[in-house]
Length: 252
Image 1 (cartoon, rainbow, N blue to C red):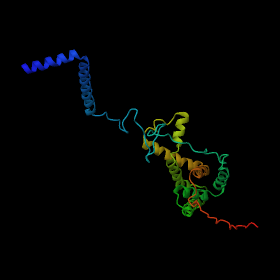
Image 2: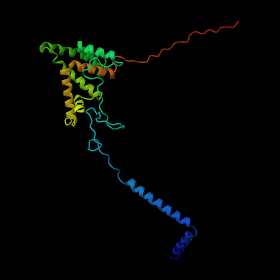
Image 3: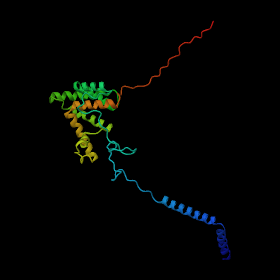
Image 4: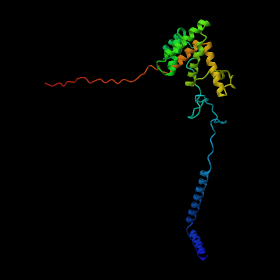
Protein backbone atom coordinates (compact mmCIF):
# COMPACT_ATOMS: atom_id res chain seq x y z
CA UNK A 1 0.00 0.00 0.00
CA UNK A 2 2.74 2.45 0.89
CA UNK A 3 4.62 1.75 -2.33
CA UNK A 4 1.48 2.16 -4.44
CA UNK A 5 0.50 5.37 -2.75
CA UNK A 6 4.01 6.71 -3.10
CA UNK A 7 4.01 5.73 -6.83
CA UNK A 8 0.72 7.50 -7.44
CA UNK A 9 1.95 10.51 -5.55
CA UNK A 10 5.13 10.64 -7.61
CA UNK A 11 3.18 10.40 -10.89
CA UNK A 12 0.82 13.18 -9.81
CA UNK A 13 3.80 15.25 -8.74
CA UNK A 14 5.46 14.71 -12.12
CA UNK A 15 2.27 15.64 -14.01
CA UNK A 16 2.03 18.83 -11.97
CA UNK A 17 5.64 19.67 -12.78
CA UNK A 18 5.29 18.85 -16.49
CA UNK A 19 1.77 19.35 -17.93
CA UNK A 20 2.89 17.95 -21.34
CA UNK A 21 3.03 14.45 -19.86
CA UNK A 22 -0.69 14.51 -19.10
CA UNK A 23 -1.38 15.43 -22.75
CA UNK A 24 0.77 12.52 -23.90
CA UNK A 25 -1.22 10.15 -21.73
CA UNK A 26 -4.48 11.47 -23.17
CA UNK A 27 -3.27 11.11 -26.75
CA UNK A 28 -2.14 7.55 -26.02
CA UNK A 29 -5.56 6.66 -24.61
CA UNK A 30 -7.29 8.16 -27.66
CA UNK A 31 -5.11 6.12 -30.02
CA UNK A 32 -5.90 2.91 -28.16
CA UNK A 33 -9.63 3.61 -28.28
CA UNK A 34 -9.50 4.34 -32.03
CA UNK A 35 -7.64 1.06 -32.65
CA UNK A 36 -10.31 -0.85 -30.75
CA UNK A 37 -13.09 0.83 -32.77
CA UNK A 38 -11.40 0.04 -36.10
CA UNK A 39 -10.98 -3.60 -35.07
CA UNK A 40 -14.67 -3.85 -34.24
CA UNK A 41 -15.58 -2.38 -37.64
CA UNK A 42 -13.38 -4.85 -39.52
CA UNK A 43 -14.77 -7.81 -37.60
CA UNK A 44 -18.35 -6.92 -38.55
CA UNK A 45 -19.67 -8.91 -41.61
CA UNK A 46 -19.78 -6.94 -44.91
CA UNK A 47 -23.08 -6.03 -46.49
CA UNK A 48 -24.26 -8.45 -49.15
CA UNK A 49 -24.56 -7.14 -52.71
CA UNK A 50 -27.88 -7.72 -54.46
CA UNK A 51 -27.94 -10.74 -56.70
CA UNK A 52 -28.27 -10.43 -60.45
CA UNK A 53 -31.65 -12.05 -60.54
CA UNK A 54 -33.07 -10.16 -57.55
CA UNK A 55 -35.24 -7.09 -57.83
CA UNK A 56 -34.29 -3.51 -57.23
CA UNK A 57 -31.69 -1.36 -58.94
CA UNK A 58 -29.38 -4.34 -59.60
CA UNK A 59 -32.04 -6.28 -61.53
CA UNK A 60 -30.94 -6.80 -65.15
CA UNK A 61 -32.25 -9.05 -67.87
CA UNK A 62 -30.01 -11.19 -70.06
CA UNK A 63 -30.57 -12.95 -73.35
CA UNK A 64 -30.27 -16.66 -73.94
CA UNK A 65 -26.74 -16.20 -75.30
CA UNK A 66 -25.61 -14.19 -72.25
CA UNK A 67 -25.96 -10.80 -73.90
CA UNK A 68 -27.14 -8.05 -71.54
CA UNK A 69 -30.21 -5.92 -72.08
CA UNK A 70 -30.94 -2.35 -71.09
CA UNK A 71 -28.60 0.59 -71.38
CA UNK A 72 -25.52 1.43 -69.35
CA UNK A 73 -22.45 3.56 -69.74
CA UNK A 74 -20.33 2.17 -66.90
CA UNK A 75 -18.21 -0.94 -67.28
CA UNK A 76 -20.14 -3.90 -65.92
CA UNK A 77 -23.58 -2.44 -66.58
CA UNK A 78 -25.75 -3.94 -69.34
CA UNK A 79 -25.57 -2.48 -72.82
CA UNK A 80 -28.46 -1.73 -75.10
CA UNK A 81 -29.16 -3.47 -78.35
CA UNK A 82 -27.79 -1.88 -81.50
CA UNK A 83 -29.86 -1.04 -84.57
CA UNK A 84 -29.60 -2.52 -88.03
CA UNK A 85 -27.33 -0.58 -90.38
CA UNK A 86 -30.12 -0.26 -92.95
CA UNK A 87 -33.88 -0.61 -93.02
CA UNK A 88 -35.87 -3.49 -94.42
CA UNK A 89 -36.98 -1.40 -97.43
CA UNK A 90 -33.58 0.22 -98.11
CA UNK A 91 -33.05 -2.00 -101.14
CA UNK A 92 -30.33 0.17 -102.69
CA UNK A 93 -28.43 0.39 -99.41
CA UNK A 94 -26.62 3.44 -98.10
CA UNK A 95 -24.34 5.96 -99.73
CA UNK A 96 -21.12 4.94 -98.00
CA UNK A 97 -18.03 2.85 -98.72
CA UNK A 98 -20.25 -0.26 -99.08
CA UNK A 99 -22.39 1.30 -101.80
CA UNK A 100 -21.17 -1.04 -104.54
CA UNK A 101 -21.65 -4.05 -102.28
CA UNK A 102 -25.21 -2.92 -101.51
CA UNK A 103 -26.00 -2.75 -105.22
CA UNK A 104 -24.61 -6.25 -105.66
CA UNK A 105 -26.76 -7.49 -102.78
CA UNK A 106 -29.85 -5.87 -104.29
CA UNK A 107 -29.16 -7.47 -107.67
CA UNK A 108 -28.59 -10.94 -106.18
CA UNK A 109 -31.68 -10.69 -104.00
CA UNK A 110 -33.83 -9.81 -106.99
CA UNK A 111 -32.47 -12.31 -109.52
CA UNK A 112 -30.78 -15.13 -107.57
CA UNK A 113 -31.83 -15.21 -103.90
CA UNK A 114 -30.28 -18.65 -103.53
CA UNK A 115 -26.83 -17.18 -104.22
CA UNK A 116 -27.39 -14.36 -101.73
CA UNK A 117 -28.58 -16.75 -99.04
CA UNK A 118 -25.59 -19.03 -99.58
CA UNK A 119 -23.21 -16.10 -99.34
CA UNK A 120 -24.87 -14.82 -96.15
CA UNK A 121 -24.76 -18.23 -94.51
CA UNK A 122 -21.12 -18.71 -95.46
CA UNK A 123 -20.10 -15.33 -94.01
CA UNK A 124 -22.17 -15.85 -90.89
CA UNK A 125 -20.60 -19.23 -90.17
CA UNK A 126 -17.10 -17.94 -91.02
CA UNK A 127 -16.34 -21.27 -92.66
CA UNK A 128 -15.27 -21.17 -96.32
CA UNK A 129 -16.54 -23.90 -98.61
CA UNK A 130 -20.08 -24.08 -97.20
CA UNK A 131 -21.60 -21.84 -99.87
CA UNK A 132 -22.61 -24.72 -102.15
CA UNK A 133 -24.40 -26.64 -99.38
CA UNK A 134 -26.59 -23.67 -98.39
CA UNK A 135 -27.17 -22.54 -101.94
CA UNK A 136 -28.23 -26.00 -103.18
CA UNK A 137 -30.54 -26.56 -100.20
CA UNK A 138 -32.24 -23.23 -100.80
CA UNK A 139 -32.48 -23.86 -104.56
CA UNK A 140 -34.19 -27.22 -104.01
CA UNK A 141 -36.83 -25.73 -101.70
CA UNK A 142 -37.26 -22.81 -104.08
CA UNK A 143 -37.93 -25.08 -107.07
CA UNK A 144 -40.27 -27.40 -105.14
CA UNK A 145 -42.26 -24.48 -103.74
CA UNK A 146 -42.65 -22.81 -107.14
CA UNK A 147 -43.63 -26.07 -108.84
CA UNK A 148 -46.27 -27.05 -106.25
CA UNK A 149 -47.58 -23.75 -104.83
CA UNK A 150 -46.60 -21.42 -107.66
CA UNK A 151 -44.52 -19.20 -105.36
CA UNK A 152 -41.51 -19.33 -103.08
CA UNK A 153 -43.44 -20.90 -100.21
CA UNK A 154 -40.94 -23.37 -98.71
CA UNK A 155 -37.64 -21.47 -98.72
CA UNK A 156 -38.62 -18.94 -95.99
CA UNK A 157 -39.18 -21.83 -93.57
CA UNK A 158 -35.54 -22.76 -94.12
CA UNK A 159 -33.90 -19.32 -94.34
CA UNK A 160 -35.49 -17.37 -91.46
CA UNK A 161 -33.12 -18.97 -88.94
CA UNK A 162 -30.25 -16.99 -90.46
CA UNK A 163 -31.99 -13.75 -89.47
CA UNK A 164 -32.34 -15.00 -85.89
CA UNK A 165 -28.66 -15.98 -85.84
CA UNK A 166 -27.60 -12.53 -87.11
CA UNK A 167 -29.75 -10.79 -84.54
CA UNK A 168 -28.30 -12.85 -81.69
CA UNK A 169 -24.70 -12.72 -82.85
CA UNK A 170 -24.52 -8.94 -83.24
CA UNK A 171 -27.02 -8.14 -80.44
CA UNK A 172 -29.40 -6.39 -82.84
CA UNK A 173 -32.80 -5.01 -82.01
CA UNK A 174 -35.71 -7.24 -82.95
CA UNK A 175 -38.95 -6.27 -84.62
CA UNK A 176 -41.00 -6.47 -81.40
CA UNK A 177 -38.48 -4.31 -79.54
CA UNK A 178 -38.50 -1.74 -82.34
CA UNK A 179 -42.30 -1.70 -82.28
CA UNK A 180 -42.31 -1.26 -78.52
CA UNK A 181 -39.78 1.56 -78.77
CA UNK A 182 -41.76 3.42 -81.43
CA UNK A 183 -45.36 3.07 -80.22
CA UNK A 184 -45.06 1.55 -76.73
CA UNK A 185 -47.02 -1.63 -77.43
CA UNK A 186 -45.90 -5.21 -76.67
CA UNK A 187 -44.30 -3.98 -73.44
CA UNK A 188 -45.80 -6.69 -71.26
CA UNK A 189 -44.75 -9.42 -73.69
CA UNK A 190 -41.13 -8.29 -73.67
CA UNK A 191 -40.66 -8.51 -69.91
CA UNK A 192 -40.24 -12.29 -69.90
CA UNK A 193 -37.02 -13.34 -71.62
CA UNK A 194 -38.26 -16.65 -73.01
CA UNK A 195 -41.51 -15.16 -74.29
CA UNK A 196 -39.67 -12.25 -75.89
CA UNK A 197 -37.30 -14.56 -77.74
CA UNK A 198 -40.22 -16.61 -79.05
CA UNK A 199 -41.92 -13.46 -80.31
CA UNK A 200 -38.73 -12.24 -81.99
CA UNK A 201 -38.24 -15.59 -83.73
CA UNK A 202 -41.86 -15.47 -84.92
CA UNK A 203 -41.25 -11.95 -86.26
CA UNK A 204 -38.13 -13.19 -88.07
CA UNK A 205 -40.20 -15.88 -89.77
CA UNK A 206 -42.96 -13.41 -90.66
CA UNK A 207 -40.37 -11.05 -92.11
CA UNK A 208 -38.96 -13.78 -94.35
CA UNK A 209 -42.38 -15.07 -95.35
CA UNK A 210 -43.92 -11.68 -96.22
CA UNK A 211 -40.84 -9.72 -97.42
CA UNK A 212 -38.45 -12.53 -98.22
CA UNK A 213 -36.17 -10.85 -100.73
CA UNK A 214 -36.04 -7.60 -98.76
CA UNK A 215 -35.12 -9.53 -95.61
CA UNK A 216 -32.33 -11.37 -97.42
CA UNK A 217 -30.95 -8.08 -98.76
CA UNK A 218 -31.03 -6.44 -95.34
CA UNK A 219 -29.18 -9.39 -93.83
CA UNK A 220 -26.64 -9.32 -96.65
CA UNK A 221 -25.92 -5.61 -96.12
CA UNK A 222 -25.57 -6.15 -92.37
CA UNK A 223 -23.19 -9.09 -92.68
CA UNK A 224 -20.97 -7.39 -95.25
CA UNK A 225 -20.50 -4.42 -92.93
CA UNK A 226 -19.61 -6.57 -89.95
CA UNK A 227 -17.94 -9.78 -91.16
CA UNK A 228 -15.28 -10.10 -93.88
CA UNK A 229 -15.52 -12.91 -96.37
CA UNK A 230 -14.10 -16.11 -94.82
CA UNK A 231 -12.22 -16.95 -98.02
CA UNK A 232 -10.32 -13.69 -97.87
CA UNK A 233 -7.35 -14.35 -95.61
CA UNK A 234 -5.51 -11.06 -95.73
CA UNK A 235 -2.03 -11.82 -94.45
CA UNK A 236 0.80 -9.33 -94.62
CA UNK A 237 3.51 -10.30 -97.06
CA UNK A 238 7.04 -9.25 -96.26
CA UNK A 239 8.97 -8.34 -99.37
CA UNK A 240 12.70 -7.90 -99.06
CA UNK A 241 14.36 -5.84 -101.75
CA UNK A 242 18.12 -6.32 -102.01
CA UNK A 243 20.17 -3.16 -102.10
CA UNK A 244 21.35 -1.99 -105.47
CA UNK A 245 24.92 -2.67 -106.44
CA UNK A 246 27.11 0.20 -105.38
CA UNK A 247 30.35 1.08 -107.16
CA UNK A 248 33.00 3.20 -105.62
CA UNK A 249 34.41 5.65 -108.07
CA UNK A 250 38.05 6.71 -107.94
CA UNK A 251 38.97 10.26 -108.29
CA UNK A 252 41.57 11.05 -110.94
